[in-house]
Image (cartoon, rainbow, N blue to C red; front, side, top):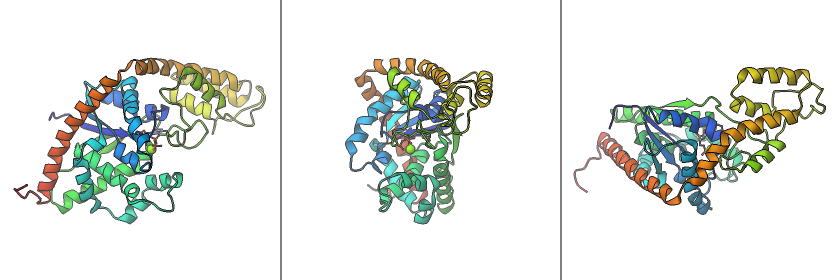
Amino acid sequence: MSSKKIVLTGDRPTGHLHLGHYVGSLKNRVLLQDKYDCFFMIADTQALSDNFDNPQKVVCNIEEVCKDYLAAGIDPCKCVIFVQSLIPELFELTIYYMNLISVARLERNPTVKSELQQKAFSNAITAGFLCYPVSQAADITAFKASLVPVGEDQLPLIEASNEIVRRFNRIYDSNVLVESQAILGKTQRLIGIDGKAKACKSLGNAIFLSDSSDVVEQKIRKMYTDPEHIKVSSPGKIEGNVVFSYLDAFFEDKEELESLKKKYRQGGLGDSVLKSLLNDTLQNLLNPIREKRESIDKSFVKDILSSGSKKAGEVAKETLREVRSAMGLNYGYV
Ligand code: ATP
Ligand code: MG
């Protein structure tokens, strides 16, 4: 393998990718693929941890997520795109790592805690869901990734992964596993179009990369602004104003944005003008992505996932061999 740093990150195939993914992680990946050895994983097994009763939802979104990657500029010639469940080595690593973290530590993980609040099974947490951070540690370490481009919600999971790495290396007196660090996007957490803390596939409060221009326009029209800003001439609030949050994330001319904010605060700037500016901004970003997405052939996607999963499997196999050897599990017989 080359001496370049290794990047790993992924997405759960629970729906199409949205603007939160774009600013939180995808945009960074497009830059990173030119500099590093990048692995991008479609995390179907992780998605099953809270969709085990609806596997078809996960299955049918695998190719959709891959299409979103390609449409957003991820180039399969520069990186490896693979499907998590096709790499069984990840699950053997998960089992070994489960011994290295306590149940209490998993229950206290802030990402797990906030996701549990959102999910239906909060009174009967499954072992699979509780342990998905362990499986995520296996994903990161199997590729010896030191860089993980993610949104801010993922930081406690990367910390948990590093704890497992340190524990493994200490207990088995090894340096096989590598600690990783998050790379955050310029917008670390894009809020939902409903004003909720995070745009999220599962909450259905996002603008998707594949949304038609009409749907994008409708979603912008419904966005909250300042509920007390009734007349154009009255002063408006920027804080909690979803349209301004999206302009902060996507409108490039920051000087112009500052003067719009000033005018909005003073009064004299209508919500419809702002929404139309946001609509132009987002349509300009999404039009080429949507066009590219529509031109992608299904068989091309299948080929990419198939060859990427083969390559990823080879790397994970070698790490698993080293892990087993560090633990003294190199028996010398099958
Ligand atoms: P789900 O509802 O299935 O959890 P999701 O919308 O949260 O879906 P994930 O597949 O869990 O998306 O996240 C993939 C990556 O995108 C992660 O790195 C995550 O931090 C990032 N991400 C997701 N939503 C946002 C957001 N609103 N802002 C910034 N980054 C985000
Ligand atoms: Mg998520």
